[in-house]
Amino acid sequence: ADIEDETLERYHDGDNNNKDNKDSKKDNVYSNDYIIEMKEVGTDRAAALSLLRFTYVLVALFFSGILFAFSFLVILFLFMDMVADLGLTDEGSRSVSLFIGTLMAVPVVLYGLCSLLTVAGFFVMETWNGFPFLHTVGHFDDVVIEWVTLTMMLLIPLAVMTVALFAKLDNWWAISFYTWFSTMSVFFVAFALTVAYYELQAAWFIALELHDRAQNKTHVDTATSSRG
Image 1 (cartoon, rainbow, N blue to C red):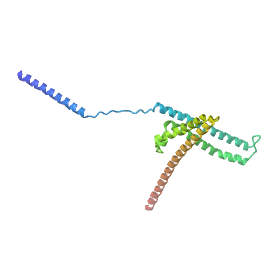
Image 2 (image 1 turned 90 degrees about the vertical axis):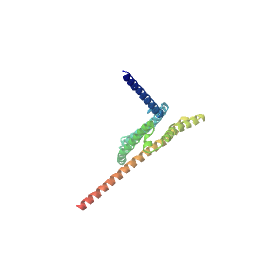
Image 3 (image 1 turned 45 degrees about the vertical axis):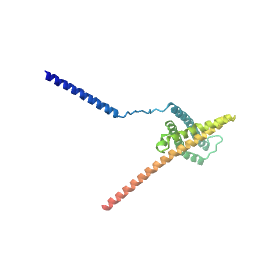
Image 4 (image 1 turned 180 degrees about the vertical axis):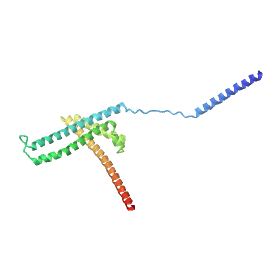
């Protein structure tokens, strides 16, 4: 019995020593580990940036509305001109040649105005998203794009309006509107030309690829026929 008690005591002592050793190893392991703090960046934009983008969208929508009104008036006057060329109005003189010329110009004008409004709609969507097309395809810096957008859409028109108000001009609203429309036109034209440039570049690369494939196929057919 005494031998069994001593054996049990040694066994328990051994277990306690093993536990102490394991705890000390764990302490050593944890003491050598690094503490890493992970911070998640939210995907949603800040409230100030959302408000600024919303203002950009309103400005872009107003400019697109002007383009839509301009396109509608061009189409309206085009069809009115066709009616006048047929001599159906009191003051219009009948001219078949002018009617045929105006009729043939209708598809070209419609296609051009539809393309203009399509680019305008794309411009509005890009304004809300921060122009990812220019960043991805054109490799423009995001900070540069944001500053250019802010300057062309808000800063220059607001600065001109402030100067006109301090100068106590009667037509300050007309000067502010013309300034805003000019800056927006320059910005929109630059955006449209950029989109057209990269579209033409992609079409040119596709045409070259198809041409190279056609030439390779011709060479393969020629080599096969010569072997035959």
